[in-house]
Length: 573
Image (cartoon, rainbow, N blue to C red):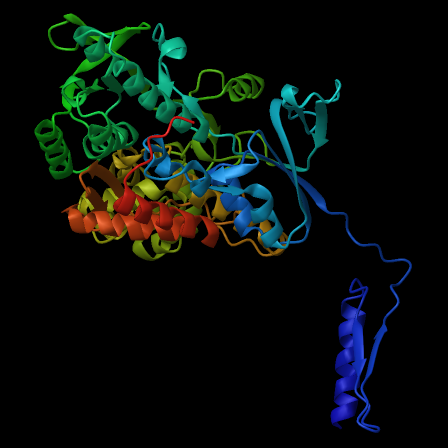
């Protein structure tokens, strides 16, 4: 019976799944202890394997690399295009500027990452300069310095395009910034800053340099009081007072570090307690924080800033200006936005599934994109109609509960609004608006949800957001075929059926702000605030765990250990 059952099961499997072209049949024959291996089933001539979809990924930053690390499906031929053949752990860039961590320690070759994925992934070190959505092509150009004899340009066809090109520093068209300021977006930027700092100290140590000139050379101005600007100011302060002061003892009194912030506080995205602590610590450390200062011009030797309250313009001599005031779109993205009718936006607009608006096969994620979350009030009549299955013009609680989960998933601002107003659920909101009435009509429904859309906020352009988006999109690609047959997303209020996937939801795991002197501030979920030396060790452990490979973890941890024992390296290479 058992052999008969096995035969019928095997026969059914082969009949129901004829596309299984190759099946290993291993027969164990117990004869003289021998083992006879294997035969191969012949593929049916009239069954052809479905062609793989072509996926082109532009960029090897947080979003693109997170996608590559998470993709598992073998249904795609993936081609990655980026001018960098590595992934850089950008949160440690401020540490690279002063030699706390070496640049090689925070980068991982992208081919190492793709090789470990087990998926068919090709890489081309080139820059995409044009996207043609009509013909499903991207046009790329290799670095002209490679001297390839005029064959640097090439094009790639795609079925799916993933745009993860990141962003560039936003100069706000301030005169002189592009020519005279240093940025902190790439590994090369950090290395240039490190070289410049050492150059300025070496130049200031020349005996013929006057005291006045030394003050100008060793005046460092950081523009932007966000996490990057604050962390660089703290790193620079520690570098000067812990290391360079021993090598250039006569120059320490000439050093001045100024932090310019146009807003009312530095670290304004953090809790007020962290902001106050950071400002107090910087004042104690001698870092000059100028709030309400808007930079209007940068020249080779001076930077001009206008006080937001008084309107007075002050000029500050400088040896170096580091510009860290947010991000803006790259030229290639600006050109693509014009093609898709988004020329008046600051980033590519996508839906909640990270698809570029109007294109089902083009995705954009990371710093180059922003999610255009739909408003509840735009769909309020359709939501009501979908819930009103009796077509009575009124909803009772039972009818509404049939769609409440889909509403919360499709419109996350609803849940935020309920939490902010300490409401248990939407039913509480509706009952409150109707004075405990059993049913609601369309006007009462609109009134109850009229303020929900005020809770809509754009996601910040951070590594944490980009990494989660890359992992989410890879998971969608991994399950594309099964979700085509069995959609798992919320109800389509503007159509029939359900969306294929659950929409992207960002989960905030907290943020850190290193403040120098082995002190760090942390704001973690649950309104948990921690500041001090113990938080610095938490920062060490979390950042080490988030590095992309065991190789980079080992290198970074050894760099930290080297710095503790021997100090930072100030060699001019």
